[in-house]
Structures are given as C-alpha cells and as structure tokens.
Length: 396
Figure 1 (tube, helix red, strand yellow):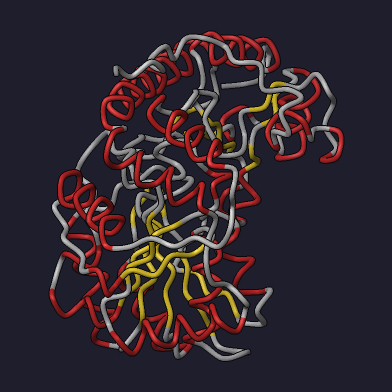
Figure 2 (cartoon, rainbow, N blue to C red):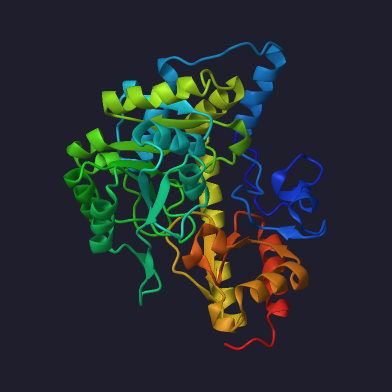
C-alpha cells in the first residue's frame, strides 16, 4: 500500500468541519469571509497511513480506557534517533495532552507562587500565560535582531536575569516560535552551562523540531550528560503530522526526581490515560509517515522561498526575518511607517487576512506579524496579493 496524500496543491474545504482556524472567525471578532493564516495547523491532509490506522481502530467500536506498551516507546525513540541523533530511555517518557499542558505542569512542579520564570520574548504566547495564570512572575531575556536579520540571545543579560531574580526555571523554545531561529549547538551549550551553574531547570519546547530548513536541530538533553539532570524535553507529532486535535505529546524527563515531581502535578490535575486515537496516530506517524513528512517538508520549503521572494519584490517597507525553522514566518512591517493598529487594520479590513499580530508574543513583537505558510501555494499566492494591494502607498 502506497502513500496517497502527497498532493499538497489541492485546496481542501475546511469550513464546517469544526476547524478552529476556519469556523470560529465571528466568535473571535473577524469577518466570516476572512482568509486565515494564523493558528499553527496545516491545510494538508495527514499521511494516508494515519488515516487508515485511525479508520481501522474506529471499526473496533469500543473506546474504553487505553494505554501503550514498550513498542510505542520504541517507535518514538527510533524517530528521535533517526531524525535527531538522540536516544532517550523508556523510563524518561511521560505522555501529556499537549506541550502547553507540560509547560504548565512544569511551572507548578518546580516553582512556587511569586517565583520568577525566565522566557525569551518575543515567544509563543502560552509561555507567558502558563506563568502568569499560575501566579508566577515573567522575567524576559529578550531576544535581539542582529544585522544578519536573525535573532540572537544576550547571554550576559540571561545570566544577570537569573541572578537578580533567583530564577530556577527557564522555558526554552527551540526551534523558536515565532522568530524562526534554530539555535546552534554553541548557543545552546553556552545557555545550558549557565543554567547548570545556577541550578536552573530548562523546559525545552521542541515541538517544531522536525521543521528545520537551515542548520540542525539540537536536542537540549543530548548536548551534555550533565544537562539530563536539569531538563525536560517536550516533543509531539502534532505539528509534524498535523495532528493537533489528537491531543498527545511525548515528554522526556531524564532525572528521576524531576520526573516524580512532574508526575505528581499531572496526578493532581487528574490527568492519566490519553485518548487511544492519539496514541495510534503517533505510532503510525513515526513508523509509516516518513515519506509523507519529507514530501510535505519540501513543499513548505518551497512556500517559504516563495514568500521571501515575494516580500522582497512586492512589499516595500516589509521585511521577512531570516528563517531557519518552523512553518511560521515572522514579517516586519515597521518599515511601512504605520502604527501597530494601522498595520492590523490594513491586514484585517483591507487584505481580509487573519494573521497573528506580533504584540501577542510580547512587546518586542510590535510591528511584526506571524504568518502560517503550511498551505497550498494558491492560498499563499492569494494572501500575498492581498497584502500587496492593502499596503500600496505606504512608505518603504
């Protein structure tokens, strides 16, 4: 049986499918006819092997409590070894209903109300939410954009923020959403050494690990043996195979004490067995989905190149940040001379596009917009044409 879902040009009608991306515009203050390129899911069918495995399980007709045994771990481990050169152990694995759940559990497990938690703004906004909503303090080692059009870490500020605020927990995003960096081995090692020196636990969100277009993804725990006692690695097939609604993530916690404290918070939240469909989807994705994944990755790479060229040639005053990882591009509209509100107004009301405004990722994101390019090229071409028309006449 061959993979069937390799036509990424086909436009699939997602309206009236309970899609958060397409069916909830009005509830979120948008017009019904808006073109959505915001939330991080793809407009592609997942691997046909996953479709078939789920359909076969549905035909069993019984959906009682389910769990997995060693073969599940071996499939996940083999993907990590094959794709990222990292070999976790079975006892390290803790499954959660999503990476954001894991971030929240880590905040509760390793800090107390009032404690400072370090992040690097601009960053995926739930990082801030799980800290503030659990009555902890956000401290930011804010990333800066260099002359090379890439974002960088200020390591001196990073260490000073730890010392000044008594930080014991750091939430790392790698590859970074939304700025598109794939942190290098040298950058992560310098960061990791600082965290070990000050006994800071690193929760590394690596959910976008399979979307690397420049450089190489480095699993934080695999950089140095000593990091294993100071970190949690958060992974999931949800981004790679478009399985967000399956609500499953694979979290690796090498240190026994950290794992015990994390599990205690899961128990306190009433989280135990996950859905059988997510477990089956994960197994099938990592064991049979590689052909689909590689074809999809090549298609998204082409979309990224298309947007880069289009922005440079047709959108004066707009620049695309150098992109290394994820399928989420970070566009800088500050050169248009418009305010954040004016930029948003043109995008929403003139272009009729639904993107993610940069301010939601932190104050340092003002003037930027995040756009999801994991869609058929025709949709992306339409979106770019709309932006061109909406921003005609701005300075640049």
